[in-house]
Image (tube, rainbow, N blue to C red; front, top):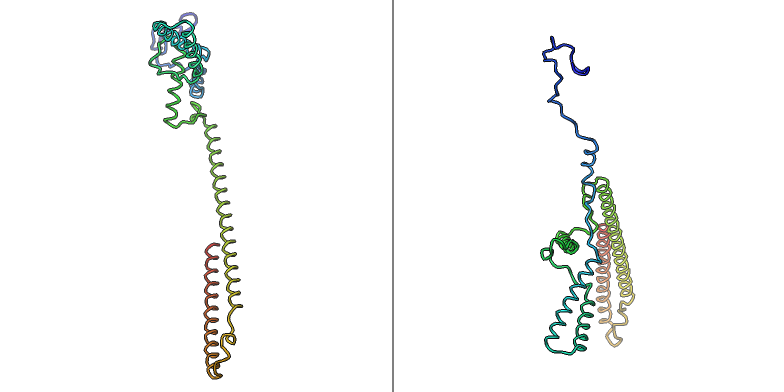
Amino acid sequence: MYNGIGLSTPRGSGTNGYVVRNLSFIKPPRQDRQDRANQDYRETPKTRKPNAAILDHDRKRKIEVKCMEHQLKLEEEGLTDDVIEEKVQALREKLLADLEKMEPVDARNFKEYETHQLQAAKEKDNEKFKKALRINKEYVEGAAFDRELQAKLRDERKARKDAEIEARYERQEKMEKERRRRYRDQEEDEDRGRTRKRRRSPSPRRILPEVLPAALQEALQEVLQETLQEVEVSQEEEVLQEEEETQEVLLQAA
């Protein structure tokens, strides 16, 4: 026994009386560390944005270097100071006008200490990579593991799809009504045209001239009457056939 801990006597205990450590015990992990590990995927990694002022200063510095090189070249040509100053100023204004259009070069061309330039070039490469993979600009890293967000997006897609289907159905129904209306108008026009033709049928009495003999006039009169009867019968059959076809079309459309 040591400090009040242990057996008073080792007799009958199967031990030597000393307190030893339980080698089979596994210490459970800390709860705060486990919670932090489970939430790591939800936290968007923080990235430092390049300092715009430093990048602008670097671009202007490159412009001044080009102006100095151009000035030295003009001095070697033997030009006067006024002409040199005028040409250098024109070059400086031209380069400053195109200052915003200057794109960051490849990240491999920068030094390790040029952190802001490296970050700007890296962002440009990431944008190109996103365009190549067709990744949306509103995409948030780790959003695929957020169940609530994914359920919300799923509901929005379903609602948008249902709205598109309903709008498509309304357009089709409207087009079908318009087609039926045009078909009815066309049928009414055809019916009015047939009625007008019937009213304008020539009379057999007007066709026969008065100079013909009476017997010949009677014979021609009978022939014309028979012909007109056959024409009327054929017209009635055509009208009935067209009505049957119209009914079939309307039944199929309904």
